[in-house]
Amino acid sequence: MADFKNDAKELLDAIGGKENVNAVTHCATRMRFVLDDPSGADVKRIEDIPSVKGTFTQAGQFQVIIGNRVADFYNEFSDVSGLEGVSKDDVKSAGAKHMNWLQRLMAALAEIFTPLIPAIIIGGLILGFRNVLEGIAFESLGDQTIVATSQFWAGVNDFLWLPGEAIFHFLPVGITWSVTRKMGTTQILGIVLGITLVSPQLLNAYGVQEILAGDVQTWDFGFFQLDKIGYQAQVIPAMMAGFLLAYLEKWLRKVIPEAISMIFVPLFALVPTIFIAHAVIGPIGWTLGTGLSQVVNWGLSGTFNWLFGFVFGGLYAPLVITGLHHMSNAIDLQLVADYGGTNLWPMIALSNIAQGSAVLGMIIMHWGNKKEEQVSIPAAISAYLGVTEPALFGINIKFVYPFVAGMIGSAFAGMISVALGVTANSIGVGGLPGFLSIQTDSMIGFFIAMAVAFFVPIILTIFFEKKGILTKWENNHLPIPKLGQ
Image (cartoon, rainbow, N blue to C red; front, top):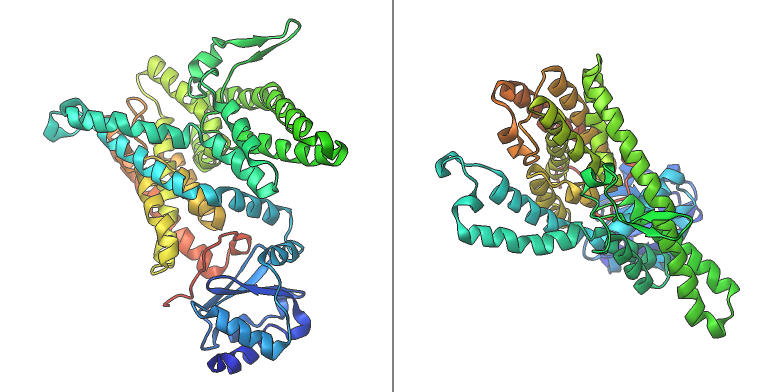
């Protein structure tokens, strides 16, 4: 422990002294400080300390990367500073005071999705692999897909839909559970709520054409009706319902006597939340979706469709988060029926590539960070094969600046795609294999747009991190090493 004494003294002085430390603790590799005046920390001086491997600020906490011997360093730091450590939750609470509303929102998103990342990652790889099996026609197979020529791979493809559907179509179950876990309320109620959002009794959210055509069963209460529509793969409605359940349960526990709380708190928290989810959240979501489809149709046929391509290309990734992207399928199919092709689908494929490239930029910048690579590498592969959820929820949204870099790259790629009249035969495989769906006379234009979607996010992600642009919004839970370490 003695070999850290001088470094601990130097760190104490460099962060502004004992009087600048509001709270301190440590995790597996990092010292975690909440500083009264974050600007009082001399970052350059701190990073020159031999024991320090890097610094970053996350969720209102100034974190100093020490490595596996952080516990020994922490003990030495406590001796030289006279500061007593607190729990990680107390540090989080103290750090939240230094966060604005957007940082608090991003921190909440990170806490909700972190437990779900392993499932999202494997789900993305499964769906990406299925895209290859059933969506790509190979010339060596007589321009047929793998599943069309092999019963074995057809069986594998069919079987893999079991976990694929469980992970993504039933994602709202995981989200509502994770919200109740974060809020400290009854987790089984969150699970039940999630199931009511994706129940087989409901029309699958992917059945967009039936929904828009009004072919939906209802709950008939006599003087009003509710549509039986599910929320498969939708994130925002599930989060809204989850938080409503959590806050309602907390309020009920304050007003209902403890002797009867076991019965009435779950009843009056769960049932009203389910009703509100289907009576309020659902109609709002589908009204927005219908409006979106009308705007997209108008934008693609308007004089300034190239500008629409820029806007849609940039905003498609956020639409994936909200679940409103489901509406694009109906628009694609209508465009194919009316015009023999769709110029919307190419932009979707380009957005997949852009978000994957943003992750690739993170991989390049943090090469050697084994913990981060466990998430980032499979997330990039999944995005390049057309499934972006692992990239979005596992890396890009948590760091923010790669998410923005991906949106910018996708925006310019979308603008180029529409300006050059790139058209797909129909809906196909997103990501890098997307060119297989493009009409022959549009192929060169698509490859130009694809190059923009591939390279621009990588360059911007690296630029943003080196220049510190948007990095103050970081809410990742992964250490960022200094370049070259």
